[in-house]
Length: 309
Image (cartoon, rainbow, N blue to C red; front, side, top):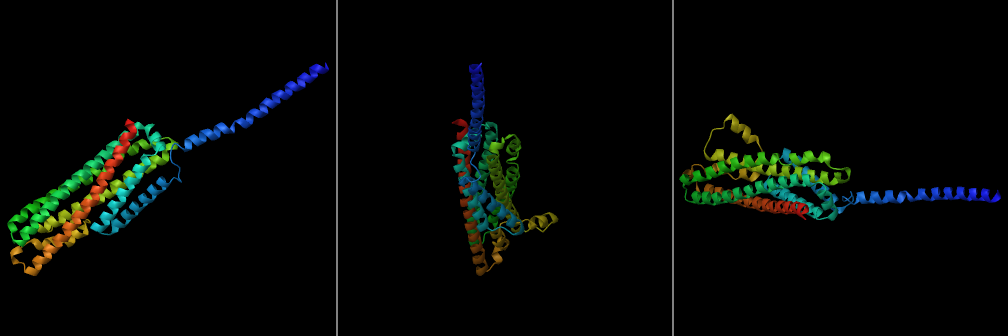
């Protein structure tokens, strides 16, 4: 009986011992699984995430200021440079293995982003071609002024009219970018929410800057065109004139190009000087938009590599 009782005590002790040692082993698996979830996406303290948020905030601040002021070529070039840096930073984020793993789990969403960036690349390609054509017309109109040849001014009027039409189309197109990919955000897991939010915000500010750029060019060319052909200010044009075009376009004195034969030498030199300023303005915008164009291509290539590798 004594031996049996001892065995019962030992058995009871063993059962209690096995139970007590099993409970401390539970936390390690939980800590491990939590750690795995945290590296699926760079955390809030990751430098690239912080940099992207700062750059996005800078662009949004510019939007708030642009609403109340007429943009200049300098401000547009500055914001294009900020946009280029934003996409360069995004490209660095897309190179991170954890970012690539997160996006590979949502290939359907990446495909929508690829469509968005293809449209961004397309509109900036068209914009570049439009600026090249406008610069050529700028040279033509300067020659016409020197020769006081008003008959050749019609080609410049046609160029401005074409520019206005193309810019309005680009503005309409770019405003639709991002809507399809944003709808997919509701299906993204909580672990990927930060990455989804960053990509959504990058899309939004890219659309915002692009609309401001194309709309500014459209409003500017509309204003210059109306002066060139000597139209009377209709109600429709009065409304258009209130739209904010690029400052240099409206300060270039394009209206002084009419009645060239009646202009004095000083007036002609002043008109040529302002057109040269406008040409420089167009060149700076062309350079800034080209850098954005290349950054958009790089970002799209990075997204494409994530799906194909």
